[in-house]
Image 1 (cartoon, one colour):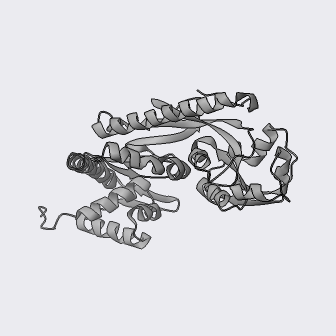
Image 2 (cartoon, rainbow, N blue to C red):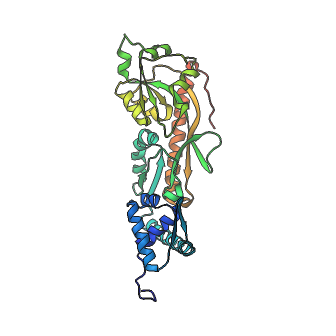
Length: 328
């Protein structure tokens, strides 16, 4: 109870106030709290009535904190931060083996998840959580331990470990090679086929486009028989597996499918990009045993696969065109 006999505001009211004060916008606060804008307004009105002071000034251009609101925001945000840090520390002590890893949807679906069984056999005590997202997440804010980031070779992400570079080559279902009326024996035969495109307006990637690849192989004027577009790369590959057309295979992501024969690469031509994959460790995760184990494991997997790829490339070096881009 307070000195004036009124009950102290509930934690929910203070949490709602902190979010509204941080955004200075009830609608954005409602989105973060997963409630309605009117519910946020009611929470603020209830809190103001309990305290007997106005916390916000409603203006035509938005909200502004009053002097009392600013004082309360400073105190509440500091207190909530301390509570969250304490709870997070307790949670990590009781669940110290939980490891959260993020990467792009394509890398998670086509490379990481198929290999997680190997990590689980080596370290069954470690619980791995995959947080796939094509956006670059703030690792500390999202409480993510490790990120496999797809980014330019230069400059490298800060304190990052190099994993893979990337090349592009046409890939398709073996069934497409068995249609004599639509051959795939030379590059210009692509004109007989449907090309499968990655077309994500939220994450434009011109270096992964067919126009980029065709220009690099002096086929910029080629007109395919059709086109299909997808906003996620794993969808492009699923369409290729279903025999719906020819996709641009990203060497790291389609290697398994080429090795088991699910996909074939009808031509030896490859075009490099200036992107690659880096391992980034969150500041809060450094020194944790399970983080080190996963980081060492994925780095060793990358070295092993790169060595295997380099051996195979050496055997067929005479068939390979000059690559664009360089490994960092």
